[in-house]
Length: 270
Ligand SMILES: Cc1ncc(COP(=O)(O)O)c(C=O)c1O
Image (cartoon, rainbow, N blue to C red):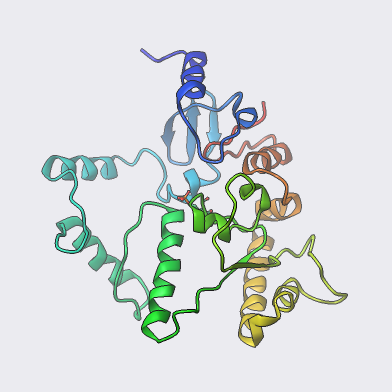
């Protein structure tokens, strides 16, 4: 028998700690119970478009029976074994080999992680490892964008370019610097006539010419995406450094009330 929504929410508020949790943002959380394709259903039977595809990780949609069957079959055979050095397992070997047939030809290996923040931690560590082998152990600086979000772990938080994410957990990990983001609509610290990418490159003089070219290229690519996707344009327009993630998602829903778009832990407006 389905549990009452009010009881579920009370139990959630009593016992479940959420990432980026503030009780005032979590007074009336959405309780999702079902997903089919791109459509989610909440505990009261209301339907929503899963505009973020979970947290950008439900890449093939909800309710894919063939994936559930494959997971169940593997769990019956071998539930888990670690891939720390000295042991391995067949699904991990097969998936790594398969990915190599799909990825860029200059890729040789895969390091599996459980999520975005852990992936970023692994990337930071891999870069350090690389420069140590090249005899440059002090090359540890990481350049990130203002307004970029990189995850809840300590390094990922330090890379994140939004101060509300830092204040309760500082000091941040040293070595992370931020340059302005590719944000053509409310460009920060721009000189007249400068593109967002040029401002970013000028911001940190140490970046040099290589990063200038990189920033301009990324700006152009992002601008194309924004033109192609009205939602992305709205997001750019509404993005504010002092907003929490939940506030941003609410603003997106307000902008498009006829097509509620929800994501992750964020609730929509009625
Ligand atoms: C760009 C980016 N990096 C990292 C993360 C963190 O991912 P996770 O929550 O899986 O750790 C997110 C999550 O939204 C993200 O959007």
